[in-house]
Image 1: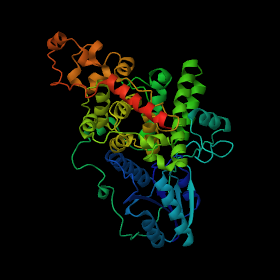
Image 2 (image 1 turned 180 degrees about the vertical axis):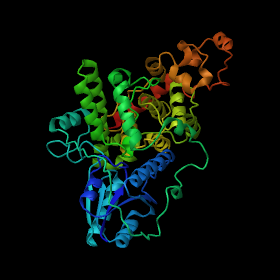
Image 3 (image 1 turned 45 degrees about the horizontal axis):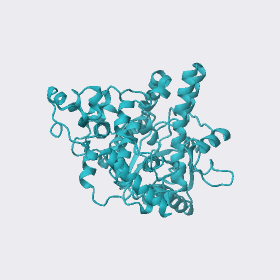
Image 4 (image 1 turned 135 degrees about the vertical axis):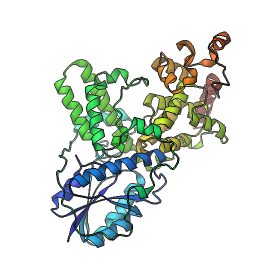
Length: 484
């Protein structure tokens, strides 16, 4: 019996899924598959992403089972597994939604060429972005390196929004699939052996149904004040949809349409400003993929070639470990790093502050920070992670200039003025008053004594002098500029 394969990757949903709709339109039994690839390029899944993937696959498997289908779980080389399955199931078509990482593009091209040589028709679709990276370019065909003209062009040319309902039923494949690589989700061993992930269960519930619920909650709650509150880490002011978007449990089109519809029904100035600010963030997400597509080496090399010779520190393991563990002695940074470890997420404003301290005050290569975020973030996305780190380090497209060095004390005082965020994640500082909570080393000794707090014992001294390290970084930058 002939069949069609839908290869799920970063599109773990049934609604708004063009590859799935194409498979259904083939009028043949549909075989949904997921392949956990071995040796997946230079960026294998991090630990937090593996946790999310386990639960997202479980949700997808349940949704498919309810519609008369089953998710075939495979592990190994993607080309070998798909080729084997095509022969075993008399497959005539393979459908998938595109991934845009450099490794994925090469892999998919190789698979497409091999399958078509054997007579299997392949079709791929966009399910992840508002606009394809090769479409939103300058009039001369070159890519953008600055966000604002990219965003303006994207809006001027318009966005084609895709919308499809969740299928109520799928034509299942009745014959037994004898592929020896078949396994269960548990066989993939995605969950950690040591239970360091308890905070994840308290914070997240992966899957497309939860993604849709989160979107509705955001619309009805914090969206109206998003433009004012999005930089305040102590309050629930963001959508928290980034991991759902990365794993494709919700489409950017669905978010865009829902936000626009909400504005139509709530036409007051605050809501419009909030919606514009949020939709702009979806534009930044597209811009990140645009950059990685056109500059594929930037996942580990700076876009600004001047940084190829930047004198990063060679020996930094002690300071790097303190940064990872949230023990730098800089409260707003440590709060963010502890939130990251506990929940697999960190507020975006705090991500920038923590990254600035690592790269500019500590002079630790941005690639090291990117690798740590990749392993610990549930929303780890190669394009976003690369753009974010290069932006903060000052070596990427549309980057904050290197001389813009975040002062973590002032950032904390501005965006966490009463210390609520710091107190949540650093309880040992909870007894300090607002005036000193972001700079405990400046607090009067008698105050610390009254609070029964001893710096260096209950909480570490700052591992770096912020002013001196700032001047050091600026001096290095001036030397690099002068050498060009």
